[in-house]
Image 1 (cartoon, rainbow, N blue to C red):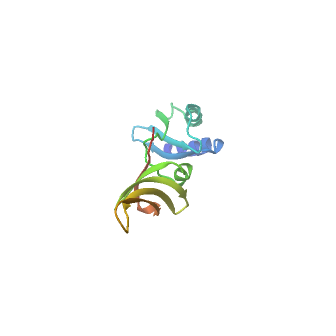
Image 2: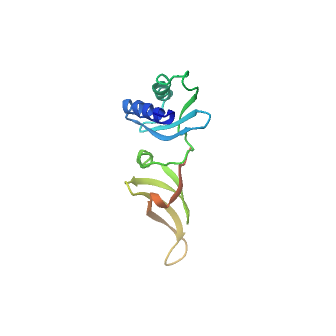
Image 3: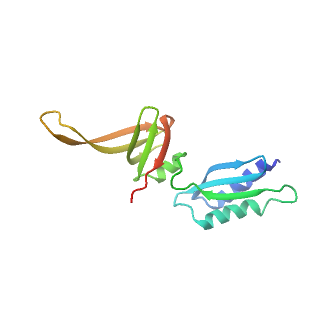
Length: 154
């Protein structure tokens, strides 16, 4: 078994022990630097990173192959990539960019195929002067999303 396969197998075993965590990205460079990016249904704590790091590091032999290991959470500003991340963030405001538009709206639903966003805007009245608040609701397929990021509101 190759080094990359062994790392993946150890990582999968570590994640099985912590089912609320899931893998966002695994990168192994040519110089054997292992970079693991995690997210979790309830966020990622420092101890979660330590547990996954130990699951990998304690089962690899540095005499056989020298390596460096970095385990981290996805971070607040990291784009959402997986359906599980979208489901976790229902009820939060997202900034979603598609090929045609950018929408900053509330994520109200996430299915296996698409997300549903809701937002309101002030638009001219159809009859008379002035403006009225209009509620918008739009489904966007994951395949149409170029980038989606959770908006931090203070």
